[in-house]
Length: 625
Image 1 (tube, rainbow, N blue to C red):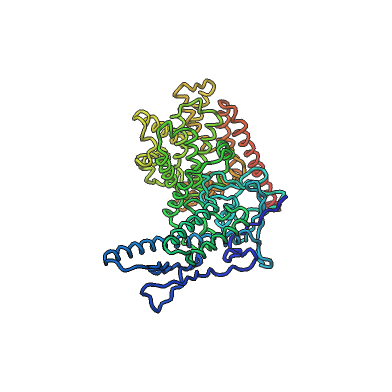
Image 2 (cartoon, rainbow, N blue to C red):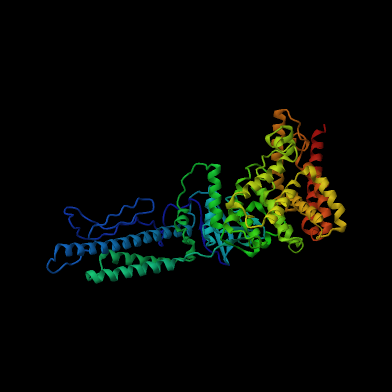
């Protein structure tokens, strides 16, 4: 099996350039050109200069870079001025062309520096702690090596280059079991036999190859040379020098494998190149700046083609949200609306959908649990349930958009403190909504305030009756997520379930509420590696609330008290008395959910029950004399 090339990351040699022979590259030397300068006696002109990427570029061009031979008698003054203006115009065009060629050559020099440093090994005896990762990409077994002090961005850039991916493409790493693993400095080292699989899961396939760039430069040089020869009669030295350098770079590039490692991509070449140069420390971004950064990434990624494998995985409850960034989640939400054909059915403009999704993202707060990632998880679970239960053929498109959008908006602007706290603390929300589901009413109000903006209104092309139906359905579904109404809604469904009729509006309304509720509280149906971190986040938010209640002298919510609640006990009670009864009833209507939802939740109950017993035994052992 081929060992492939070893890829260098972080600051290991990135600051220098290695030549093919292994020595340090020389500084770029200015091109020498002997030329006379009109009216420039006593001043020497050495010609245009190329500088390294770290130096300022200040290039001086004389009025007469290429001195044309002038013969014949002088004509009238006006004719002479016109002739000189023509000469100067031609000279300006030539100077501009030469400048562009020099910039292109300088770019290629930087690319060669980057490629050489990336494809080299760690210097022997450097003493730097490194990690070697074996991975398969594009049918090649490769090795990546990076230092322990690398940032997450550096590591991602390294693998992005290895995958020949553009700066806005989405990459994911899979282990031998097919699970997504996080591309970060904490990625576990492995052997060739246990290599990872690196894939570009969303791309636009519009990269620009280097040979085309070189051919363009060669053509421009040839065109410029022909034009100059027509006027002067011979090729100037500077053109010969440029041609020589282009040929030299072509020969070097032909000897380098995987040219797309060098990262030239349409409209993003400078950005890609800059990623390999040392990154200055930047001040921490404000919330607004972070959001705008996410928006830019989202819009840049929004035209990417997500692979069929990811699209299918998105339809399952085992989807791992922890391996996706916020901008990537926005792309996946766009995929959900697109694949359910909502854009066509409701005449939604893509730009309006993107504005709506971004505004929803902005209206989720940075709190431990009820944040945008939770919003994405609930929406993704709803999307998966729609496909698993074949609701696309059982409910109308309007009912589907109600459920998906309700899931998306169900916790907008959640403050991290539940309804009990709002009422006991007599907050503005509790006063505004008269202690009746204050949070859920607020979530609805925020959702429709976003939709009231024309640039975000995905419902603007509907009739008034259609809008009224969707608004009413969303309000019902979001208000149903108030756990104070859990038993009321479940008991209604229990009565309907044996005689459920998809043509009955009342039955459908209750089912839609149940589906949103299940999506909201079914983290335990996900793999334990996905679900357990969510429990930690939830307990952190719960404990924050109970701490605040104690400080303010308010009644302490029992299941949130850090002094009385343990991790396993909180879940065993919730699963046994809330989640399992709900899922059991839904599975009676949709037997396919037994395998995908009910069984994983039963395993979760067993897992936390074992943990609870072990905790009690440990505590019992420590209290014995």
